[in-house]
Image 1 (cartoon, rainbow over the protein chains, first blue to last red):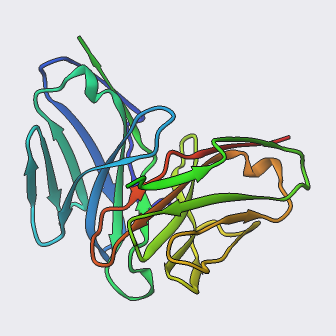
Image 2 (image 1 turned 90 degrees about the vertical axis):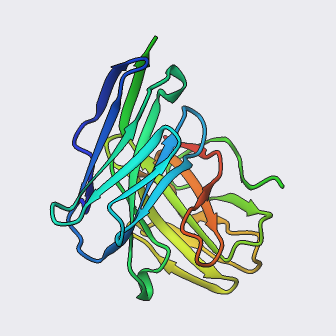
Length: 115
Length: 112
């Protein structure tokens, strides 16, 4: 039972254009969402996050949108750069209790930005 | 700060062998966890710890053991390696209410 899903295994965009990575979730108890970026042979690194009380969070070229009614979030990268080529993981945290701190990850989307 | 360190980087085991994957962090983080990454599966939580002396199971704990005797270290033990445990293992840590987890560089394990 995949609670966090990234249905696009890969995405290819041209340098300078927008990259949109999507993520869907099923667990209504998730209260915090994160995006991680992963380069080959390295551990994931935190990129941006959003609380369930917000619908948008922006950090430089990266913006995350949350649509709670649709249980959907997306990461927008504008403008895309070749250095953004990596695997992007969506993750979600369940609110409180014994699940505190536990993250559930999606399968990942491989982003390739062509010069 | 070295951050989160993991050893070894690579390991090949034979079925039935046991070994310990080491993880250490120097950020005084309370929360530490172990994940495995498999193709098409994302990262799945194996075990986690909310502080020294406290551990709990994640999504895929079978075949693995953990202990947390100090804040800094969180080793993962494979009791009797199986080919299904071939994977890349990541250790992560975070501090208190901070949501972002910091990941180590990973250990690539192959079980023959």
